[in-house]
Length: 336
Image (cartoon, rainbow, N blue to C red; front, side):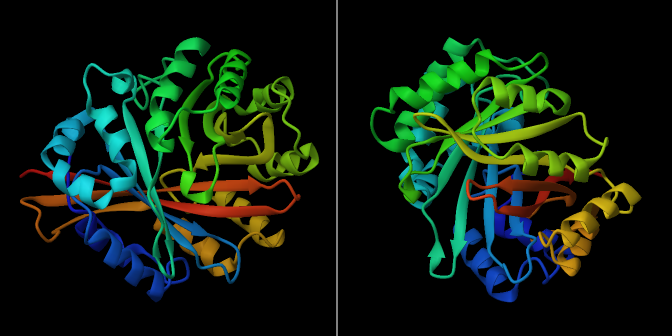
């Protein structure tokens, strides 16, 4: 696995990033932010909005135990602690081989790249021990304990019992071949709700949402299924849990290795027709998919970077919808 400075990773994929999705000011913010981060990340994501005139871009990076990520985290600890201070206690707990978070295989660090500078980092951590190689859903009580172990250092105090209890109840109602994948919190936004991402068969998604008491607008949600057609069997379902299940719902799904698939062009055209995507942004997102091998500054070998696209559809409590493109990139060294 290639552990490159994030600035080098961004340099490697920059030729493939359309200015329709990442503006020059946003590129400058990304460059300034990633220049300070240490080389401990195995995946990166630009989170772009597809709506016209919305040029916000956020950054996500993944740290994984697989491939030596845990050792690299320990090696770079002084820089990690300096640059990611608000989540240092979580990092310390995740590194502990005998701690409660030892069963968490990876986590994502996210920054909102605001015009005035990046937000405080926040985290979503994996609560499925075999992910991404497979599924090993924990029993609800064990899931609750693992979530609590990760949320406590992120909040800086004892987490509320209500959202954790609700997480266990939602997990107990999951259908077969489904699991809770990630849990996170966003304290910098003033929230203590749990953000939960579950992998659920699409055919059982609405049954599960009804079982857990999701209070959102089913008509809008079914409209998304019409957009998706029959091309997916699973999607990632994102919910916020407080004293109750919140109405905001997001579906996240990966597009295939080719952006030339007529089905995905129809899907993007559907987003454009609904006013959720700009034509140029939609076309640029599809062109992102691919891979390339080349030289990267500071890398001892050629680097092969795989570029994948995820699309996220968000249905908010007020009935408004938002479409996002996740420009994912994953490097590995090529040895000749």
